[in-house]
Length: 182
Image (cartoon, rainbow, N blue to C red; front, top):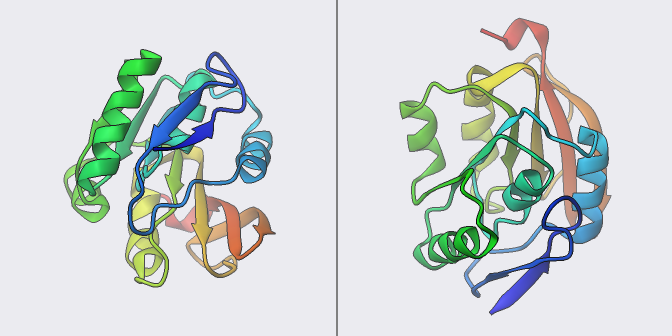
């Protein structure tokens, strides 16, 4: 089993384990630290959605920093099982883990979230399918965090608030453009 360390909060320095799986790539420590600096460190009172939970690094980090809840989606069986085991080990009762496709979840669910993490598999066109749907699931003044194999630019639907690059990974913090909020 591989492992990744939680950076801060109540589970600071705790490791979560995850299996080898195709396309599974944990968000590096440095990038997670930058992301949570952008979000203000504390997520008290926030409901989060992790569309491609994978290792669970983003979701468990958010819970460690006092998020009210994190809904974690992971379609692959072995990573989903590891998420369930990590939830039990950490006592993360606020983690709602679903073995479900992201597009199917978005089509069926109407909940709004203050933070949505979106780190889909690369080179499969996920962002083109997901980004048009995310504004209707985002709370007012909420953020979408996106990792991609390319840089995103602001458009009529999304405003890139912050961005960076680590190795081959481009990471972005987005907010819905005012006209795209429903």
